[in-house]
Image (tube, rainbow over all chains, first blue to last red; front, side, top):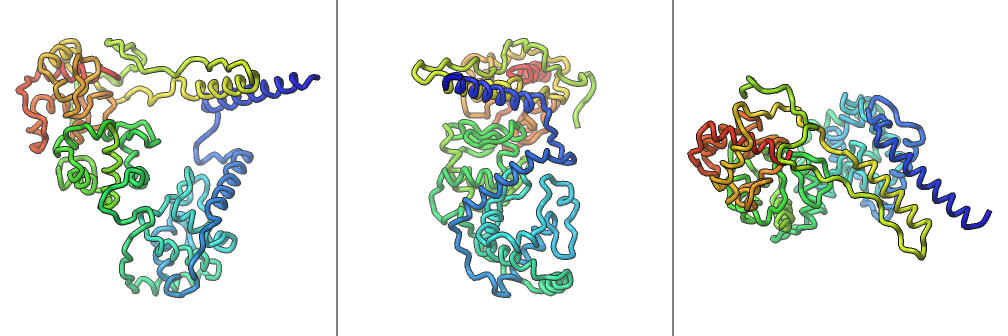
Length: 282
Length: 165
């Protein structure tokens, strides 16, 4: 067999495999239902791909000192409020939300034992695509994220009783709301379109709007946002200026009480970035 | 909420659009590779294109299942009304000459939009109501009351739902 023949047959095999995979996908043969488990090979592939991706990205992250009691307390408060629903805690069952998901949300006791603080930080901050794990970057400051990491690293040391007692104690312990200032937003007066693009995803705008440049579902719940820079009006009620856009994005019902678009709690610096991005759409 | 009488149980999206407006199909067969590095590259690109073709072929959101038939509305009369009224002075409207303005929002894929003006759930009777008198629905809207009567509004609504499905 000549070298050429080998190359040709390998290439042909590659084409066949591609077509085969394409057919499996196109005919909807793979079951996306969460009640039907992944094929072992698919699960392994996705799982290890995820792990390697996280390791790669978390490699350079240097954790601060995480053993301070105050920091762990603050983290546990957040943990009990935001994480338990899906992940559970020592002696605390996850809610129904966290039971029916695929992949199943990890029990974080093992994560706390096995993963580095940097890896946990990266995952909590950025989330993981298609797993149900949201990124908390736009919701929490890095300080609070590190507090959660401290709590997760501490979980393996806690018995159910420890956890219960600690949480009970924390209920009466009012923490001053930390100023939320995630790394995703340097405070600046002028909006940044690149950051706006991230903010648009982090406020789930594309769940309702089709926005050029944002990869997302084909939806017409809100109007398509194409050509926003050249539109005369915002939502048919405000003249289209940057300031008005910021105002609208931050609180649509205050501008037009009849609008279906809700107030999504967009912070001003994020609204400014979002507006900056929308004004790049000619 | 809206008048259900006389509405059909659904929309047959496989029926050809009376306006002959079709969704673009995915591109044709892959390019033939240039001579020097022939086999692998051309086969790989063929495989890639084929995969893409299989994946996106016929891929859309499916038919709109909400009943979007306007009772007593005539799309062709609606098209004429839209041109005569000059709706295109503010709106981009598929299939209407010169309708390419960006004052109001583009009226593309109107039957797929969930809301009218971000306010009314998008059903035929609401659309008719909106077209007849927008400020009566939302006093803050920039869209004026153009004194459009009900019969004409029905025709216009019918056109908007037919155009660019």
